[in-house]
Image (cartoon, rainbow over all chains, first blue to last red; front, top):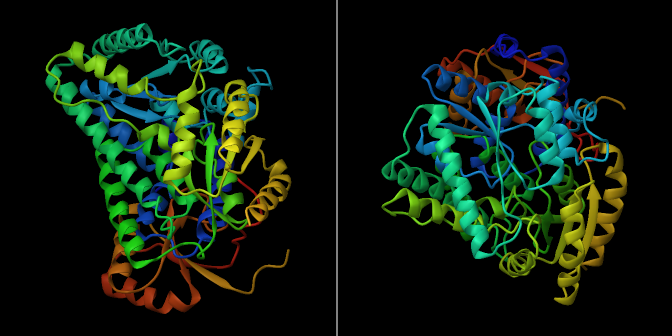
Length: 424
Length: 89
């Protein structure tokens, strides 16, 4: 196999330390994915991407940079990809889903910071993530206090641009977010040297909408009450990779997978035995390669059929209006779509509880696991109203706080196993 | 822990283009293989390999011969897949 070390060295990575992650991946992938039976054939694409996760896509991004294109690294689903794509830029997700990166993050951040933030900062400062080395600009947003302060530290090392996301959903907040998008567009134009025209932005809106529609089709197939055509662990992988992949290819591969899942539903081909309990996971995002909770649920007698999280429905629900003639109207349409996202950073945030109750019905769930990364004050606090609403609706719910470390796996197995047993 | 008595086969490649080409050839000829990262004990490099079960290895070897696709070798390893190990990366 082609040795990626030369590419990583040229990127200024700490190749020897990064080697530890390369060593851990095959074992974790084997235990989580190769142990599954009867997976959809279409998952081969995502298996292929994971098997060389720090090689294939980074090499593509480097080729694009040679052609003069700029790469924008983003941390959150609120940054409008459409604006970057309209200026011929490329959006990539960044590393942040592994315990491997946490110690380097803890060198500069308090231990009582959420593992996603610690891992992101650690991946950059430890020089062990190619995406963090490749991106020309990093785009943050004000969705949590941990990230806001982390950006100040990252900003000493990399060029950061911060979008100020309003924390309420009044009309003035939607207008404020529209202005933020317009200001970001100006910055992207300056940085890329390319002008964003209404035609280019409309094309980008359609492209990203198509990606959302394709992901939605995969999720739609998971709603079948009589058949589970794909494991939650596989569906999570599809969403995780979507943050990194080329949007057109992502849509193409997701549509192919959705075709197969729909056929599986017609044929009654399931990855779980009939009667397996259906679980929805709500809460904080699960960045790649965070597969812990899904894997534990799915090796404890249940199946995950939906994720109400940023690496789930929040990533693809709601489309941006297409065909608008002016940038002003397009920026407003973008603002309206993104402000429909019911992140826990908003107050009040009744839309999230409504989403969860709606999704519980649509996906025919038997129970909900509300999972929050340690030290995520926003989602942890919102868990109070989420879990109360679920109990009032008669939907069993289990609240869990965890991080990336393996140390609580046995405890999680005991609690989740008991919860699944309680579902009957 | 005792090594498993079950042997798994990993087809190794010089590059992922050849890896994907052989995977598609294998699947289109009715044989079985699964894409996965190269096991660490086989190679220090990250990259793709094909996991083949003992009952499928003869058919896969035929696919390698018939397709003419270049491979870097086939490694035999005691099975090391344990869904209850709870070691994540």
